[in-house]
Amino acid sequence: MCILKEKMDMVLDKGKDASLLFIRLILAYGFYEPMMGKWSDIGAVAKWFGEDLGLPFPLLNAYMAASTEALGVALLTLGLGVRFISLPLMVIMVVAISTVHLSNGFSAGENGFEIPLYYMLMLFVLATHGGGKYGIDGLFTKKSCEN
View: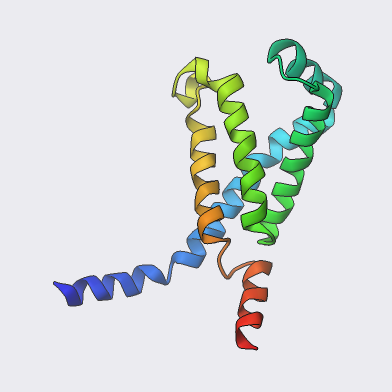
């Protein structure tokens, strides 16, 4: 039984870096459209943040959310600073869940918190494991370990 487990672990461990790459790219794609929507009319987003969601400093928060998402799309795609950017993106997901999605329940079809929760869980994986070897971080880690 131990031999089977060891062989299975060996095979599955080879997919770790590919799975981290896929998570990064899925998240980058998922943040891209909302980020573009915010930048296309930041004033309307600020108005929504202030009037509908009751967030303080709505214009500042709109710019911070849009900028963090833009940086997230770029860094997740490149695999650069993955652990760093995962944390503020998780904060955005907490705010999105608590201000927009929670009152709608769990289901994504009802605009519930299902998708932001999945994003937050994937970001947690990236924050704890990094972006893997298929990215700029992976190149630096490999070179710094060789010296």
